[in-house]
Image 1 (cartoon, rainbow, N blue to C red):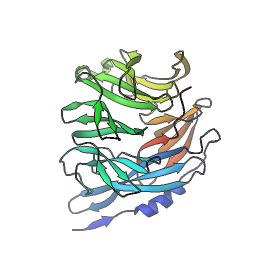
Image 2 (spheres, helix red, strand yellow):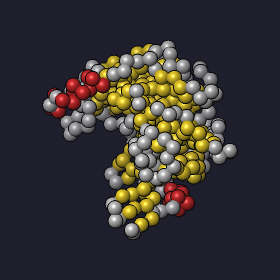
Image 3 (cartoon, helix red, strand yellow):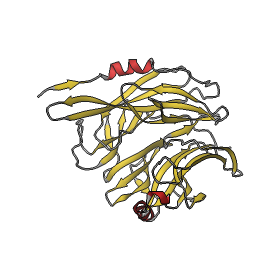
Length: 345
């Protein structure tokens, strides 16, 4: 059996440092701010059996020094290789197939959320009944997540892990309710989700694509206890694909089709939630994974422009893209802007 190996992680880290260009100013950033991002890549290929193994590495990008640090590597054997580095706890929260430390998916036990403590070297499974995990957001002694569960495989539920005792709480929504995307306002301590009904989506998918059918979508906001539910925005004929929230500022993107088509109409807006005033409007298709910058003059986003895939900065005033982190050796799977929480104003 012929085995071909690929780029080791230590070399990847060096390649990352040379991949940055055209940074915008970070003078308004808190010195503690950083970007946690995860890169997935092939580690080995079995040519005889046409099978591959994959790994993932979590990095820290310092917004002040623009330096990249390798933090933690783990096997990519889940649906999505999610990883987030939290400096406050010196831990990495990541996804791994249940009780599987190999680099191949063994299709057993589902994808679970783990925490690796970088100080003690302990690796702890935080969930045990998930099937697939789409989002992980650690904040204030908790981990918020969106995942499909064994008890409800057709929907994506919003959940919270209390790190003080390991207890898990889910939203109080109907079984057919599903979350397309999530954003956490760490300053105002609110969670924003775009919810749709899976039965409505099933009906829409069976229609002719020229009908441009989408299920109804609603943006809801919850407090950190998954209570105090508030309806923020309702769309009857638009699918909400992206949400970015910070300090009572909300960016959302809505499409008039379920999946992007050549004739899909997109509307993206930035709203001041204090008075619901629209501050920015565009037909830009902002991707699902993104975040406001601290000064809220733009956003970071996981995007592909031309042949370059990575994290970009988008300026609301100039409407221009600036590459922040680009990867020529693997795929940037996810990222988060990590910063010290501010007191509510």
